[in-house]
Length: 374
Image 1 (cartoon, one colour):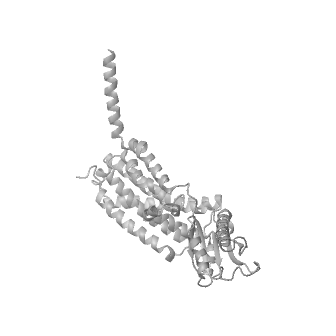
Image 2: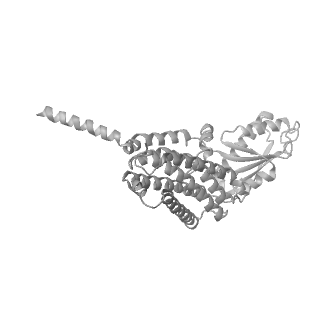
Image 3: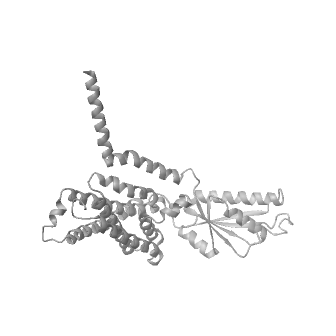
């Protein structure tokens, strides 16, 4: 009797395992999603020091010893050095693109720098971003350490260098200013992909799409109506999110609303192509989350939504910069925080058009009104 119970339990367990394995959604969220999360955050490495954008300008070609200091500054791992003219770097600082700007005189270190009692110190002027005081303080501390080591190597004790700091009232961008465009881009992707994939796979599975072929309505008319509906939703969605960000969180909106909505529409069209592609690949409603998340989920973290791509390893940046979500979030962010014109985001727009064409072509190959593609 007990053997029969054990045997029955064993058979039921075997059947339950088969049912679980066949449930693609359960397998994805149980195994693959945790692995994706661990891999993404493992590669990003939040334990690494943040990258500090530093502008550096010299008023003339540096002396050999001054050049050594410049090269030492460039080698600091936590610095991302931008070398340019003083005017250009100050402009970038005022826009909020730099944490600090180092103005280094070409003769900071000369052959006779230690000949006096220290009355004529070599002075590095540092202009700091008032809205990023903590990172600016870190940058100044590192600069002082480099100058101290150089000073000690020359004289052993005499203080040869001075750092003069000036705070600049740069555009006071906060994290919400970075986050809001990313959330808009993310929401457009989620709406375009999942609303299409779930609805059309459900219609296809129930035979509704097949029955529509028997009506006087043309298939393209049905698809077009659904696309127009989702584009309207995309505009409303964008407007609501931007309004909440501006009113509730005091985010910045420096650019053109018209350009913002045009880019949002283009992004929605791009991801609608992905939604129709997935609805053609997934054969059942249960398979939609597994297929969609396998494509969409990595972009949540790698598409510049929640944190800058610059925090990722160089090899990973070379990959993620080509993701569709990266182009959408970056172009929206440029418009909202930097008053970017169309010419300034032209590269992102071109890539979104390319992705739109590719995904629409894929959708034409995978999507159909029949329940099964033969």
